[in-house]
Length: 67
Length: 323
Image 1 (cartoon, each protein chain N blue to C red):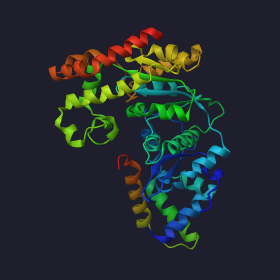
Image 2 (image 1 turned 180 degrees about the vertical axis):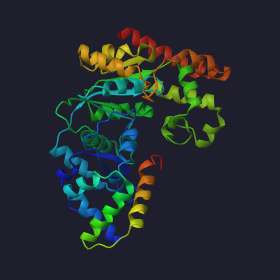
Image 3 (image 1 turned 30 degrees about the vertical axis):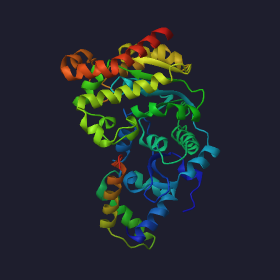
């Protein structure tokens, strides 16, 4: 996972306002764009593919109960 | 990240992860979502439709549950539900979940992972207390009762669970064994898959288990759960409930055993929920015992009679004594 994306993740997890803003977006495309924009605003460089890959990995790990 | 307990407000433990070699907890944001789906996994799936939840989770050492336990008391457990599976236990949990004052956690994998963790019994007792405290955090002022429906194999760990929560009343739910076997033949539960839950069949290897016919293996599994319940038959905190007592037993025998009384409005709300199929709430619930018995093969009947019926009759005998 991109180092800059991980930094953004940690910033969001400490900031309830950023969390609230992102939770209100239900459309995936819009959400991914907003996450990238949020990262850029923090001087962090990662692309939409980084976000999508993280979501794919998380989807898989969340639902693998028996592993 | 320097995580504080306040960062976890409205977040809930969703998964235990051991990939780092240590036990860690993945938390998911619940917000104002109640646990009203048939199973805890269904609630997680629903939450994961929000892209935020798919992308963002807190991951903490399991000790963080302990910090929350020390700093934020959740609703204390009101009652526990153990069961053989396919016996109306989801109907019971759904009826209870229909009331906003109830927090109902149904077959949560986080609970299963902690109960079966590779750790001492002392540690598992502590972790279980911490975890259920976290799952039972009060998010709405009306929440006052907490019910945990465990996975079917958790009855094998009933003594450990009692150590963690002495004094909490529990029920063990069961059903005509032929009907339970047929239900699992239609759609096997995880407990029926050889090797998934090793301790259901102590002394039998995976090779041994696959030698049995499916019908025999299912009967042995159900027998294992019934035997475990019967080992706790003298326990005054326990009560046996047969599927054929449902749905009225929820507001009568079960409510009474849990020390809970229901208003007429509560009963109407719960009865309304009982009309829906508990596992598929968009469908109507219809009792299907006769259909399942008619579907049973001679092999199902044979193994049910040989391996489970004696235990079933004993459960019924004890249930009648306590009625």
